[in-house]
Every structure is written in C-alpha cells, then in structure tokens.
Amino acid sequence: MFNIVLVNPQIPNNTGAIGRLCVNCGAALHLIKPLGFDIDEKAVRRAGLDYWEKLDLHVWESLEEFYAANPSSTNMFYATTKTDKPYFEAEFKENPWIFFGSETAGLPADLLEANAEQCITIPMTKEGRSLNLAISTGIVLYEAVKQNFTAYKELM
Image (cartoon, rainbow, N blue to C red; front, side, top):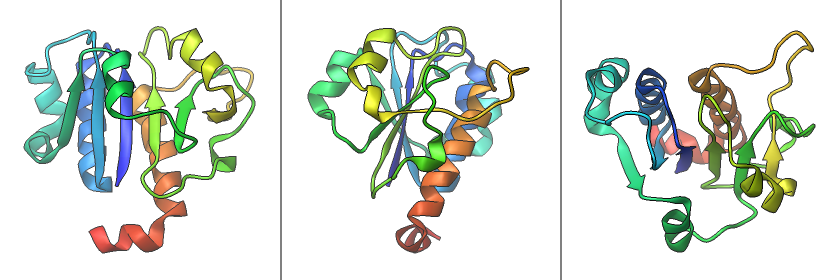
C-alpha cells in the first residue's frame, strides 16, 4: 500500500483529483489539518467523482498527531522544490509515505530540515517554479508504483 500525505492542502479540486488517483493506485490518502476547505465540499466530490467513497481516507488534526500514530522512518519522502535530489533517485520501498505541502506554501521548513535526506523534487526548467499539486502527486506516486510493480500487480 502506498500512502500520500497532504499537509494543509488548500484547493478542494486538487484534493479530489488526488483522492481519485489514490483509489486507482491502491494508496491511502492522509490529510493533515488545517485544510483550506471542508472535505464535504462539492468541489472535492466532483473532482474525485464516484471514487471518493472508495478512498482509504485518514484525516489528522496535526502533524504531531500523525507522527504519534506513524513514527518517522526512512520510507517517508518529502516533495519540495528546495532540494536537488530528483524523485526518480529515491528508493520507494514497500508501503512508502510520500508527503506534499500546500499549494501556496509547500511543506513546513522545519519538516524539510528535519528530513533533509528524504527530500525529493521533480526536475523543472529554470522557467518553471512549481507544478499543480495533483500533477506532482501523480508523477511521484507512479514512480513508486513502477518501483513496486511486482507487489502492485496483486492490486490489479
């Protein structure tokens, strides 16, 4: 099982699309509050279509609560534009945790600093500054699927 962790997501359509992606990849979606929307909003459900009810969804009150239940490990990866390590050089072992920050602020600086060795990025040209959150999640999640495809086929 893959785990996508969204820390303080702000845009319901992105979260809905990521929920749909998670269902299709056999991934759990973890949302860390505060959220910039109510997860019952029509925009989330519309973007997730009929997948939202099939989603393995976990909502956490804070990062502290999340880490109390899911201790930090080397199988946790933090997507950011503030590193040079490309996502495809990461070794996504079975059951990886892949963190993404909010659309407006990214992941908290202290979280990135505490996990610098586990930070990954999606390479972009100097003309680009960031990608849409749902697109970024899809890129990295499918690399994890690729690296774990033998086990993943059991979900198909």
